Length: 64
Image 1 (cartoon, rainbow, N blue to C red):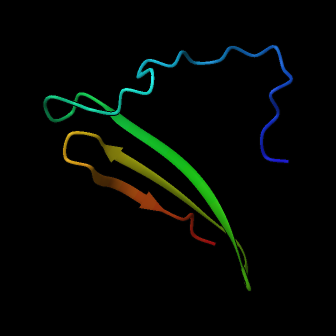
Image 2 (cartoon, rainbow, N blue to C red; image 1 turned 135 degrees about the vertical axis):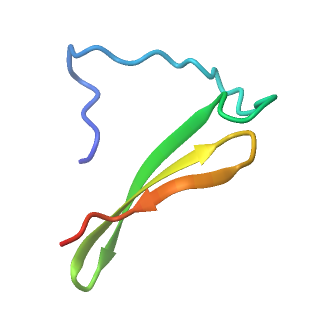
C-alpha cells in the first residue's frame, strides 16, 4: 500500500479546486509521482508541470 489515509496528520488544502487553467506563466504548478517495476527494481519518477505552458519543469528518478 502506498497511501495511508487513516491518520491525524494535517492535509494540505486543495487550492486549485480542479481548475487547471492559468492566465499567465508561473501562477500554477502541479506535480505527481509514480513508480514502475523494472528488472532492476522500482523506478520512481517525479514530474512538475507549469500549467500555463503545459511544460514539464522537472522529472527524474533518484540515482541508485
